Image (cartoon, rainbow, N blue to C red):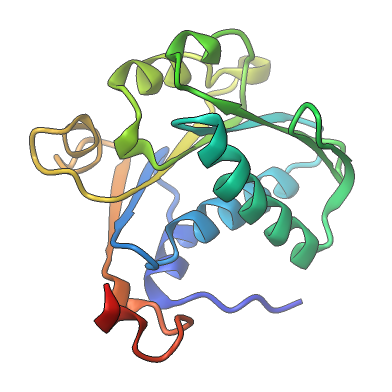
Amino acid sequence: LVIDVHPVQQAFLDSAALYRGFVGGRGSGKTWIGALDLLLRAMSGSAPRLYAVYAPTYPMLHDSSWRALFDAGRRLRCIKAINRSEMRLTLGNDSEVICRSVDDPERARGPNLSGAWLDEASLMKSDAYSIVIASLREGGEQGWLSATFTPRGKAHWTYEVFGQGRQDTELFRCRTIDNPFLPAGFADTV
């Protein structure tokens, strides 16, 4: 099974950093690579684990993150069961992926996770990040976090976390024009 990705997306997939950020403009492939990465990581383990996808609002979660996750799962042929009402996927190795909104960051409290993806992280409050990283501890093991987002400047929490060269943290930058899978002329229109 071959799924094409562009070079920056591949570098993101190949990174072993505990905390990874993918920042880029509209159409750079952020959400797609976030979804693909989460599924590949979730399917790589032999024991069933719990993973989470977070988005700033429920409409963004439903209309973008969930759709990308479902599409990537369909292409990978790794989805065993879908619970649409709970926005939960069960994968072929019995790992589960839950999808939640962090419009109220306190709602992210609770689960112990092996990994989490923050989609459109630059539209989230920094509290969401702080709460989610404290959940990365399933089975006594340190979980990973990836974040996909549009740049918001050096004063934003995403720059502080991902853009400062912190230990075990890597940031991948991508411009809209770097995505070869966009329609011809798309980058010029945005």
